[in-house]
Amino acid sequence: MNWVADNLDLIGRLTLDHLRQSVIAIVLSFVLAVPIGWAAFRYTRLRGAVLSVVGLLYTIPSLGLFVLLAATFGIPLLSELTLVVALTVYGIAIMTRSVTDGLASVDPAIRQAAVAVGFGPWRRFWVVDFPLAGPVLLAGLRVTAVSTISLATVGILIGVDNLGYLFTNGAQRRIIPEVLAGVVAVVVIAVVLDLLLALLGRALMPWTRRTRTARVPSRASRREVAA
Image (tube, rainbow, N blue to C red):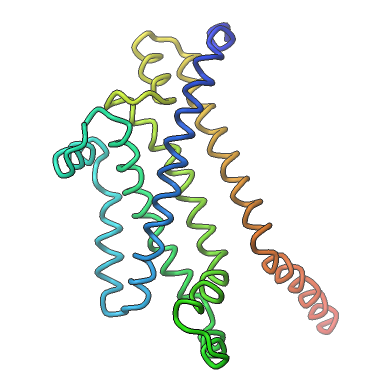
């Protein structure tokens, strides 16, 4: 493991680059998936078509998507922008269904109550629908985050420096510790970001903790009654 000790600066720099590219794509995919998912939920006749088309985006090979984006939008093929846009597309493919499922999980009676007290569509969405769909949205966001961090390594194939560099350089030079360092770094970033999102969800949605806590006594009481 002497290679790792001698190249901590390189690993640290590549880790920061990898994290920056991934976080930008995760945020963009979430922001763009919310209106798409809402449209799929709102217009039920189009829901199946929208979700199918968006889901198919994830099946596009990464190299093919890089070339397609460069040819369609005129952005340089060998650029960080191309990688971020591609990661955003993949993130939207994952996140859109979570948005639709999250909105569908909200009790219709709660929506009707919000309308009854005078909530308009815009206010109802942000005050009622979006918060109550939060647990499902968070689950989808966590999957999107982990997937994006893993996929970002393919950026090295178009000359974008990140942790993928450790894979290709280590394989070419047959330095196994370098490859292992890249694998460990990617896993660590994914785990840490997943934990941060989970903690953020607990902080922003405290009612989910109260709901879980309330369920425990009810189960215990049912056992007592049964006994």
